[in-house]
Image (cartoon, rainbow, N blue to C red; front, side, top):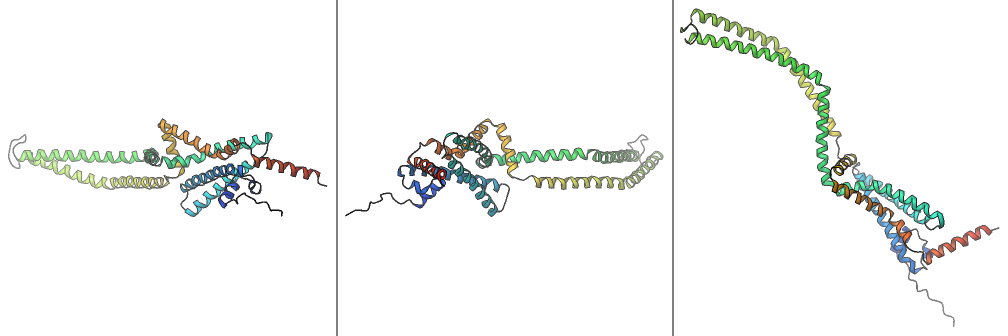
Length: 326
């Protein structure tokens, strides 16, 4: 009695099929190549890690420029899926042979370097967040001081003119007040006997001193009345100028956000000033670049197995049939 052969190959689970799909493998062929199944799981895991890393990095990047969590999640998933699609396309292209293999390798290396440089920014911003926030406070203060100096320079001519008028008029009042005080002191000395006449009471000289004192006091009163509107006008203009500067400063401060550009600027200043941070920055960029290249390296470094031979055979067979079809 003829016995039906038993297929000892276990059915692939859902996780394996998903990893094989990530590795751009033909599942129908790979099911019969048990020796290569684990190899393509590893490639699939490397693609999965790159996909998740890119999605998280893009998500953090968009969180620095957007506030809507749904939009951030959607954009992060979209760009992460774009990286995944690029990985699968290049791994698929690696199935070719000869000089065709160099093109996806070179393209992937250039693309990985570019993506690594960009994605490393939000990752480093996240890793050195406290230091960057402290640097941003210093940057904000420096920018504010610079803005104030620019405002002062812009309004210097107008402000200097107002302050000069105020100073001149106040000096006139102070000089007149000092004159009145001198006349008053002379009058008091003449009445208490400590003056030049040595007489106590309202002597002729005391009455002259009193007349001079009263006349000077009246002149002071007239001068105050005359300068009061002008002083008030100049002080109002200075106050308006100060309020205008405060309003401009408030608008400028509101523009100093903690977004991606501000954090990147703070990071550049930190890396320029601190050599240890600069070294770690380069190391992180290298690591991220290696993560981006990891799926391609996994495909390149693993030797060809039974699956690759079957794929090459099918490609040759299908090409033969296509060329000989009537």
